[in-house]
Length: 111
Image (tube, rainbow, N blue to C red; front, side, top):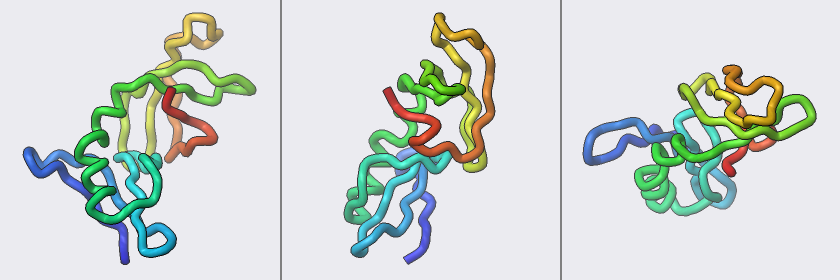
């Protein structure tokens, strides 16, 4: 089993990847490598990406900034990195853009 790039059938848009997971399962990953859902059958992982892979990019997120989690939005995503904009009005760095290289749930999480 090897990693597979997933494109939306209707328009060919890149929506993420599926990668091998334990017990012959597959893990759906966003275009920037963030886990989406849990390990599942290959077809289910692909279906999840087609349904939610791009939509979650517009959702609310939080980023670990110092010791705190602050609200942010994704500005730009690629397989290598994500650029977020801090949009928490109470944050000292409100409006600041931060580049994160392949962030995982310990640094970036969906709200």
